[in-house]
Image (cartoon, rainbow, N blue to C red):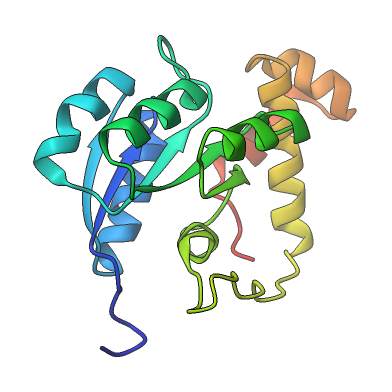
Length: 182
């Protein structure tokens, strides 16, 4: 198998954000993975026997059953499943709790597909290889910061613009742009 071919083929992506979920699924499929998507915990548990995933990417905050509880439920049904928890609301406490419940790893959004795939990889000794050192561009760092503040402000453009010290229209223009690559 060449380096460009995925070793693992089946992935279950669980995220209530339709746009993020579909973009992530598309990016994974372009890399050769077989992807099943679910908008929440109940759908994920229903699809699990059909898709028989080897990996799962689970959002932390979702309506109904949250990602931490879903990690536990998925592992009861599929004990060998490797799960990476993604969240825009990262904290050390939730990261530790996710791993305690059986998550393979925990990443903060926005995480790109290569970072997510890398989180699942281990070598034969069971040690994860060191991630490649990538320094984000200044534009990417700005975009990530703006989105974190926007999330913390509950999506309020006005409040976010005030906290960032910029005009509301400037903020809206910056948000309309796709994230700049690393």
